[in-house]
Structure formats: C-alpha cells, structure tokens
Length: 312
Image 1 (cartoon, helix red, strand yellow):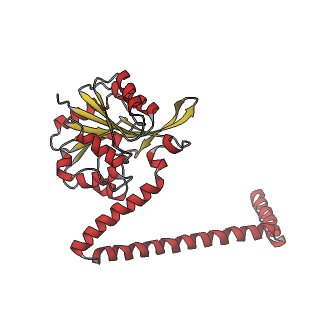
Image 2 (image 1 turned 45 degrees about the horizontal axis):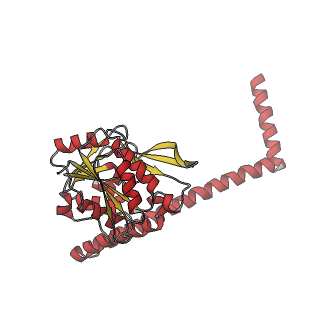
Image 3 (image 1 turned 90 degrees about the vertical axis):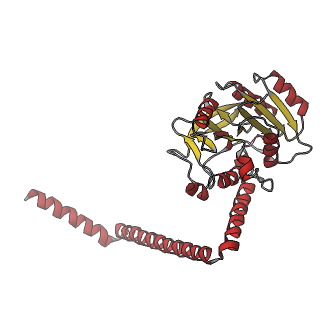
C-alpha cells in the first residue's frame, strides 16, 4: 500500500549508526511512513536483523550489487520507494521528533512548493566507550529564514537531513547526479530552485547534522571524510554550469566578472599591505621612542610639566 513518506537511509558498513537512525525514525510523531534502507556494502543479513528488531513498522533493505557510492545509493532507494514525499536520512544524522509531522503539514498546505527545509543544528560528538556522546550543538546558518537561490549559488546552505520533498520532483528535474561523489544534494537544489520554490521552517532546529571531528574512515561524517571530493565536485558543478552558459551566451560576461574579481582582490590586497605597513611603522616608532634616552627625558619632562600645571 502507498505511504505518505519514504525515508531513504543509505549506509555502508555502519550497523551501529543504522540502529540509531532507525530508532530516530521510530521516535517520529508522524507514522505514515516506510524506510528504504540501502545497503551499499557488506552485511546485508545483519542489517535485516537490525531492521526486524527496530520499532519501525515497514523497513525494506535494498542491496547494491557492489558498492556504488552515495548518489547511486540515493537514487536506488528513491526508485524503490512508494511514498508521496521523500527524505534522505543519512545513517548518522538525527531529527527532532516533530520533524516529519511539521514538514508534512507544511507540504500538504503549500501545494506549490517542491519541498520544505527546516532550521538545522550541527551536533558535535565524540566517542565515549562503545557509544557516541554529544559534546556541543551550534546553529547551521543561524538566522536563515528562507531558501534563496542567490545564497545557494555561493555555497550550500542545506543538508539532506533537513529536506522533505515531493517524489515527483525527480520527474521534472532528474535524479541525483551519479557522476558526483559529493555535493549531489547541492547540485540537486540548484536544479530544483529555478523551477519550483522550496519552503522553509525557521525557529528551533528540527534537523541535526552530526559531526564527529575526531573520527576517521567509516566513522567520519561524509563532509569531513570526503573533503577532497567535496572540493573537486564543487568545482565540477560550477565548471559544468559555466560551460553551459558560455556555449549559449559567449565568454563576455564571465571574462568581465573574472577581471572585476581580480581587480577587487588586488585593491583589497594593496589596502591590507598599506594598513600593515603603517601599523608596523607606528609600533617601531613607539618602541624606538621608549628605548631611546631622548625619549625617556621627554617623557620625564612631560610628567613634570603636567604636575606643575596641576599645582598652579
């Protein structure tokens, strides 16, 4: 039977995180959902045991033929899903218990939106024995009130754990780009926003993007563990879109903007050099005055004059 929401969890050899993610879904106040658990590694039977013991009524484990990466795992899970709405819940991230309740209510009410994002917090964790302990929580893009294409062109301001959207959006803009190893969510948003608005729920965070700064290899957060891939694929997306622009419009505007950027950087660099040079000169002059005999005499004379003026 169809369900309202499909929660796609993609994982690779991290059964402890999968257990926590399923507990997180089970704690949601909204319950008309299914979980599609994409196993992009070994241990499929172990994951099925975890799914069977979870508090989620419907969990389907989908195995990849071989490890295929984040984007392909996301597409596979969505294609296997049946929900009207879709959300990617990475195995190590978390939600407020009302995340689905409030995002579904918003999408039901605002039929013109492709999806809805929520205010998000970055949760920092460190290992405490066999478990992970939260050590801090900070806002992710504090003060964000809406989803802006202008701001997203600069840098990604959203993460998958914060975004519930209509499954039908893929029919209009395509799937996650499987040629990318990272930034696939940002690339997807850049294709959605020019065609459809995305709503935003501000206020206290409903989504928690979890970081483990000291973790390595499979325990690391994807952003920290795939830093090289993020830098490379960020440039790949920008180059692809710039190429498309140039093919249709020529190089005039990009050349002018590149020249303007270089001039701005050079101007700022020269201003900074001037500020540093003047500050160094001031410090050196003060130091020389403090160390010289004439400087000491002049300071003693000033003190006597001040005292004398006060006595008159």
